[in-house]
Amino acid sequence: MSNQSNAFNQLSLPKSLLDNLESMQYSQMTPIQALTLPAILSGKDVVAKAKTGSGKTAAFGLGILSKLNVDSYATQALVICPTRELAEQVANELRRLARLINNIKILTLCGGQPIIHQVNSLAHGAHIVVGTPGRLLDHIQRQTVNFDALQFLVLDEADRMLDMGFEDDMMHIIKHIPSQKQTLLFSATYPDSIEKMSTRIQTQPEFITVDEVN
Ligand code: ADP
Ligand code: MG
Image (cartoon, rainbow, N blue to C red; front, side):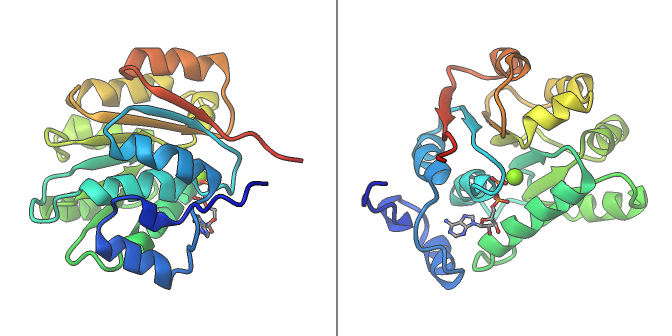
């Protein structure tokens, strides 16, 4: 182990985020955060592989929250997750990270919840949408979501989404969002299918892996 400091304040994060990280007692970046955050902040597409529990949510979450324009209620980031439970977890972590950002709205769009409530919430605007593929596609087809101003697309647990057969749904969603955005692919494993997906949807991505240390 190196003694190198990975303090969050090495990065040019807004003060509202740094202050909040301190109150959350996130004193150091985890390895995957230290490697991916500078690339994300510099605007690159990233493929990140690290095991479960390594802090991947804050890695993409802090990148998104740093660049968000809260004054615009257009949806600026879309995070796609394989299950409702994971989407709720990600949304909750994003809300915790964004606690000191006033008026920020983070909405989950998952199946198993009345669509009409989601349509009403969307009508009020959401800076960040976190959802599962089926329900997101449903909203796209109903034209109740608008991703024209999207700056970030995150595929979280991308390997699991491919395992669960969501590839066609994901490609369909991606067809409906602008190509001039940053695409971040987070995964616990890196099978060939992820590499193929990356080739199809990303531009000169940076590949970042944190291997398990035994
Ligand atoms: P992953 O997506 O890689 O499985 P999570 O993003 O769910 O991991 O994070 C795992 C846990 O680590 C969460 O409880 C989260 O609050 C915590 N965590 C993330 N980053 C840090 C950090 N820099 N310092 C302390 N705890 C952290
Ligand atoms: Mg995760």
